[in-house]
Each structure stands twice: as structure tokens, then as C-alpha cells.
Amino acid sequence: MTAKKRYERPAIKRLEAQMPNKFGLRTAYVPMTHVDGVAVKDLLKEHGSPLFVISERTIREKYQEAKQAFTNRYPRVQFAWSYKTNYLNAVCNIFHQEGSWAEVVSGFEYDKALANGIDPRLIIFNGPDKHEEDLRIAILNDSLIHIDHLEELYSIIRLADELSKRPRVAIRVNMDTGVFPIWDRFGFNYENGQAWDALNKIMRSGKLELTGLHCHIGTFMLSPSAYGVAALKLADLALGLQQRYNHEIKYIDMGGGFPSGNTLKGAFLPGTDTNPGFDALAEAITTPLVNSNFPANKMPLLILETGRALVDEAGYLLGTVISNKRSSTGKRITIIDVGVNLLFTSFWYDHKISPAQSFSNYTEETMLYGPLCMNIDVVRENAVLPLLNKGDQFVIHHVGAYDMTQWMQFITLRPRVLLIDMEGRAHIIRQRETLESISQYESVPEHLKKIAP
Amino acid sequence: MKKMKSNIALSESGFVFNPNTGESFTLNPVGQQLFEMIREGQDYQSIRKKFLEIYEVEDSIFEKDYEDFVHLLHSYQMMEPDEQA
Ligand SMILES: Cc1ncc(COP(=O)(O)O)c(C=O)c1O
Image (cartoon, each protein chain N blue to C red):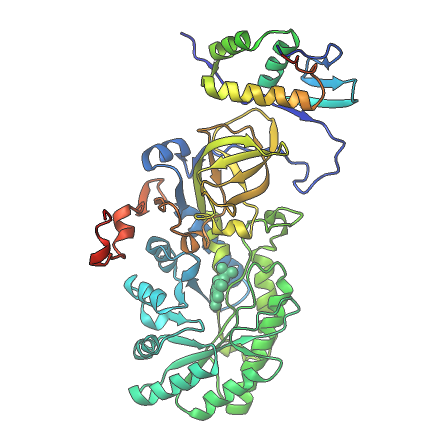
């Protein structure tokens, strides 16, 4: 018997004298059959669908690219891995191996970083909700505490007395960088004097070691100039401290917020076209620092808490088509086994999706719905894809950031996460959840154990 | 029996012109093959048999795709109205 031909759904499409739409004129797509040399088909067969896959190679390459951009322009640069972006231990440890410190925003993340073996003096503790017990441990461990509000400042001063320690602190500063909305809910405002007020309180207390100044001006910032403004304002505070108190801070922490290759919803051009790139961002940040009045031998360390830009591209979500149908208005609907439970970032992005096998060049517009029995489960409102049928496989790109931390155990269990190492070997770095693993947190009172009357 | 209007033009490269509406269409290769068979007046059973012979496709999937395709041809006004029973 001769092999049968590969089937593709028969399709007919009206030709419209179109203006180039938001998909541009590139309806061509390239199938993605392999991730770092490993066949998507084999991965799904062995580990089930859907499946997260992380490329160690991409993480290390991105990290080196970012590091180069900054060290080419500034003498002292340090990255601190933003745990909330992706705190799978294997991922954190890749960053730690590359030399990253840890940046955490909760006691849970702090403990995770400690358990990963990072020196506690290299943990930056951010966030508005540090519990008293968290602060106590961070102070005893000599970690770097970035103060978010005055209540926290007073707690730390009190704990410094209680523990007879001199906590190492910075303040988080928020400011107008010309980009709206201003992220002014975290930290102390620069323009209205709150920042100086906090700095004065710290210096006058005499009990805290003011080590640095911190800001995180927003996320997915497409404009390098906003960073330039922020760097200038932090440098101004640092030089002011020098003048007023003859106090030298050790570092300026510019936070995170660099965009990844993803495309924001409603954006006209794909994210890869609008991303300014590490060089432009590094140029914007380092220029005001280099040109400021810091003595050449006393430039503060430049810390970056870059999250999504370092890991987004390294993550892939592999999945399978469940069904296709038409809506009441005739629009094509494709139902896939990946929903917003796994793809939280589909609320922000129009994710790039590639088929994992080749098709003819024929494409169609389709909505992509996830498997959840919920109306919110829309992965793409409009994607141009080849003619996918039940069982066809696909790869969703740029899911390394926030999806594996903000995912939900909702309606179904979360799948495995694999890491493909530098040699192309696959490692399971998070097991598929099971009914038992989820149920272990529950208990049923005695009188509810029997359901028969 | 699904019957296509006789004045629908198909070019060799898979372009369709419908003089009734002035609209043009493209077909993918499988679509072109199916379109030609419908235009020749072949009925579903013989089309189905041919497709299952040539292509790696499940019966139920092909049936669904066929229905969808014919439905679109109707909506593009390329088919004669269905005969009422
Ligand atoms: C304080 C702080 N630093 C760093 C980050 C990482 O941000 P991004 O992933 O946008 O680089 C965040 C994220 O919100 C943050 O709140």
C-alpha cells in the first residue's frame, strides 16, 4: 500500500483588496518542528500535551547579551534575578550560575532564594508586604532591604534596636519619567519630596546603613528615554546624599521593565520590531550616570532586576488542537488544549503561535479558544494560521516570563515543565500535577466525609 | 445533491471567479481538488471515497470539513439553492 498524502482542511478564501492589516502582509509562517534540536512531536508523545519547554541555551545567551550591553558602557554592573518572573528553581539557578543575585518580593520568594543556595547578602528584598518575621530574618542575614513605605521604615528602625544590627537598606523611588501612567504606588515619590523625607529619616536615625537607591519605573517599557530620566533622578539623589550627609551610596538599582519579544495587544507592529534592544536601553541608563558628578573611581554599582526580557524568549508552550468549528457568524474557531490557566500573559499579549508541522501556504483567520469551560478562555482573538485540524500540534512562543508563576490550577492540572540543556538533553524540572498533589491541602470535616444520607 | 452554479470559473492555479458577485477567491490544493469534484457534480459518497483513498484523514473529520466547505460555497453564492424535499 502506498503512503497516503497528508491531509489539509479544504479551504476557500475571498480575496479582498485589503489595506495591509495589523498582521502586515506577512501571512507566511514557518513551522517550528523542534525546540533546541528536540522534536516537538517526540516531546509531546513522551511528556503529554500541553507541555512547557524552557531552553537553557536561550536563557544563557540572553543574559550574556544583556550583560555585554551594560558592561560595554559602564564599569560595574550586577544583575539580580527577579524571582516572580520565573521562580522554577532550575531557572533561578541558571541565572545564579551566570552571576545573578536574587531579587524577591515576599517571604516565600526569599526562602526560595535561600534554598537555592544564594548568599543571603546577595538577596534584594523588595515589595510592599514584608512581614515582621521576614524583616527580622533579612536583617539577621544582612540581606539588602528595599523600603517601600514609612511603616516599613519604622519597623526596620525598631528591629535594628531589638536585634542590635545595622540593617542594609535602600529606598524605592517612584517618579515621573514622562511615561504614563506613573507607577507611584510603590516606594517614595521623587518630585513631591517623599523620597528626600525618607532619606532624611534614614540618615538621621543613625541606625540603618543606606546602601542604595532603587526604582522600577514600569514594565514592558518601550521607551529607553524614560530610563534615562530615571537614572538622572536617582543620580541626583545620590549626589545630594553626598552633599548633605557626606554619604556614599553603594549602588543604583534601576529595577526591571525591559520589553521582551512579545507583541502587546492592540500593537500595530510585532514586538520584535518595536523592542528597543538591550544596547539602546543600556545607552539610555548609563549615559546620565557616566556623565554625572560621581568621582571616576567611585561610580556606584549599577544593579538591574531585568525579568521578562531575559527569560520570555526561552519559554515555549507546546500543545495540540482539540477541535475546530465556526461561530454563529461564520468565524473560524480553533479550540486548543492550552488556555488562560496556563497562559496568563494572553491577557497582555498576542502570542506568536507556530504550527509544529508543515502545511500548504494557505492560511485563515481564526479565534483561538482554550479548553476551559469558561467564556474568558480566549488565547487569541484573531490569529492567522494554517488550516489546523484535531490532533495538529503547535508551539506558542515567548512564554518564559510570568506564565509559570501566574498560572492557575483552575479546572485542570498544570502540565510538566521541561528544560532542554546546553547539550540538547531534556530534564523534567516540574512534574505534572496530580489529584493527590492538589488534594493534600484540603481536609474534609468528619461529618462531611460520607455523602450518602 | 449539491449543485454548483454553471458560470463559476476556476483557473489552473486555484483562483475562483464568481461572475454573479464579481468576487475572487483562492483555494488551497485540497480545496481545489474538492471544488473541482463538486463542480463536476460528484455526490458526497463518491467524493468521500476518493478522499479517504488518497488522504490520511478520518472519515468524521472529512465529513465535517466537507459540510463546512459546501456551506461556505453557499454563502459565497456559488451553489444552486438546495432543492426542497
Ligand atoms: C521591583 C521589581 N523589579 C523587577 C521586576 C521585573 O520586571 P520585568 O519582568 O518587567 O523586567 C519587577 C516586576 O514587576 C519588579 O516589581
